[in-house]
Length: 133
Image (cartoon, rainbow, N blue to C red; front, side, top):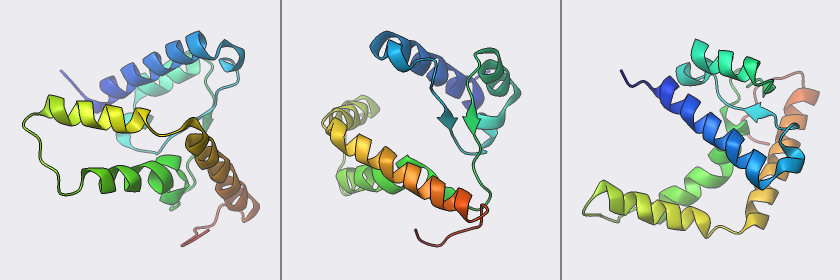
């Protein structure tokens, strides 16, 4: 039976292998920040993260805008896809993959620097909810 947790677990495993291959110097310093979605907190995922010694940065309650994809990637992707139509799911996947690969590394770096700033503000505030940062 397919579940989102099983899929998420496979994504995490692929990510860890890729980091180990491409950025071996940081593979042991990775920390994971993800939501409290059921697939993220599922036993099989939590068990894998514990066995692989992957620390998880907890998502503060009521602070969904801390995730880099929320304030950097999703809006950009939404603008790219809006109003377009494709013949197949494969064509959408190819388009999205090309679009994501074309985003310069520096933009991802800026997004993660902004994430660190937002996270620091949240921590310094005692993990209170923010409308805007």
